[in-house]
Image: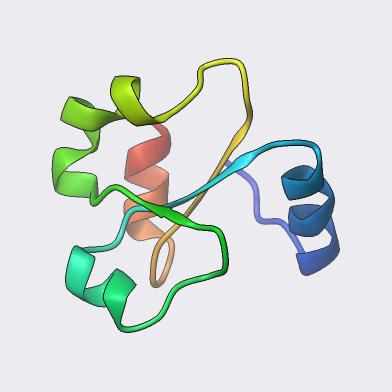
Length: 73
């Protein structure tokens, strides 16, 4: 996992990447990045195959980075 700056995120999104927010639904509803898809970490293993395209890059984020690191695995 690597940290990306805003320009790199923007470039990756323009190439068709999915922006994945792995915070809880309440956290997501209180504010999220534009175009982000919310799949909370707790249910990610159950829903990832239905909601994420294996052929596209996925940018994962959460509040501080811990859940994103777990989600990447």
